[in-house]
Image 1 (cartoon, rainbow, N blue to C red):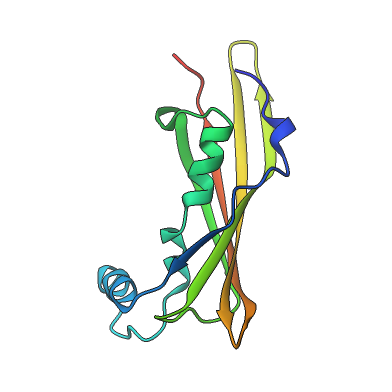
Image 2: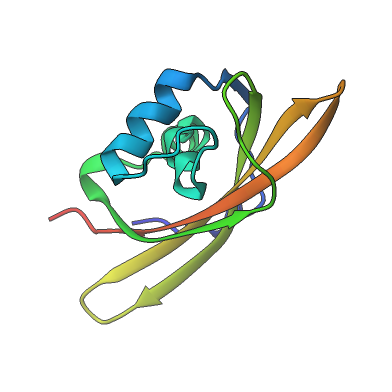
Amino acid sequence: MISLKNYIGRSSAQYRDQVTEGQIGAFCKTLGIDDFSVAPPTFLTLFRKGEFELFQQLGLELSRVLHTEQEYIYENRIMAGDSIYFETTVLQVLEKARATSFTQFITFETHFDVERDAKKVSVGKSRTSILIREKS
């Protein structure tokens, strides 16, 4: 396995999606939340295109990826009708080399903005950590 440290700082394209009442309602219903007026912080999980783009750029096979940690920082409300913009960056690569194995932990950070009153407003960010398993 080759080191992925050279990819620290690499970013995905910027994506834009429309937030719908149906998305928020289905997400809240799954979590057992009765108030569908505002998306819960974990709603940001739906917007992972940037991570998958970076998996491809880094040559990572999904069968070797193990999701280890997820963190959300929620700054403002996300509501139906919002246009949400997001971009993902490789934040950190940690490597552990042993005599018989080489393991890498990668942390991605995704920033989320919505458009309100003709300007972009930050609604939060997420950090996703994964472990890359060696090929058997």
